[in-house]
Image 1: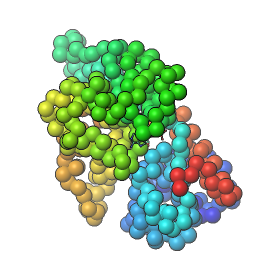
Image 2: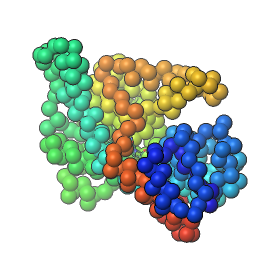
Image 3: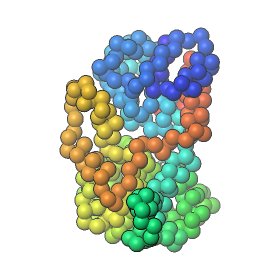
Image 4: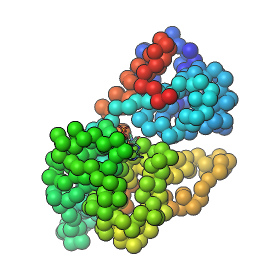
Length: 333
Ligand code: NAD
């Protein structure tokens, strides 16, 4: 099989070469893009990360493609409808980072609650005093968790350790977990009304796109802190900015942005010219969030720990081997 991997680090390449011996392996050091398709159009299998947006046109131009192994939990970067039509199997890594991503979400929350960034900057500027740095306690606050799957449950576990009260919303509530872990499911609007902090852990689907939006912004408890480590598109970026502006949202900690792809690719786009269609309004709003004094942004980094990357790589290798052996595992479709 010709297997094309995008964006692997050197240590990953040597493990892949060792474990997938006998296959033709191609390593491309950047995300797979439509304009570079000549390099990978005869691939039988591609293994990608979230920055490779695999659209219908790319799929139609890869006649041998049989399997996509995404090295992520989310798969909103792949046109699944097109894959179905072309008979392409897609697998993901469903459980590599349930603690990893929740730890990052909590790190964002702690950084906001304790004014960590401002504190560090102040000391670096030679001002060793706590003036203007007052934070808040987390103990006793109500955390609203949207999506209680693998990551959401780990967020709840950590929050309980901090003495927080937890409410949650999920289309598939896990009542057993709620009773053993000590949290309560509520309706979505009730969660918006009663949470001091909201942390988002749903996949980006049509049903979750802009779950927090201009229509329900006014339901939010005044002063709420929003943490998003899921996907940028779950929140309407404009609503987020309006909420911050009106003081409805006191602060936000974001690992994901709705137009993050363009921001990531900006240096390259500037060098090569803007050949693709760009949503400039969204891009401008993202930069407003990045520079907002009450928003902290990390660069889609929540997954990025040594332990999680090992788990991702070994599961992806298992996914590929199982597909080649005719018994695909971790199938999305
Ligand atoms: P999961 O599948 O275990 O849990 C998702 C939960 O969302 C499920 O319980 C599901 O019932 C619920 N859900 C789905 N649609 C819903 C809807 N319309 N309304 C309410 N609830 C709904 O997934 P997970 O492992 O917890 O990951 C969650 C998301 O986190 C992923 O889809 C991915 O987008 C994101 N993620 C981000 C990073 C990062 O580095 N920032 C890393 C891994 C995952």
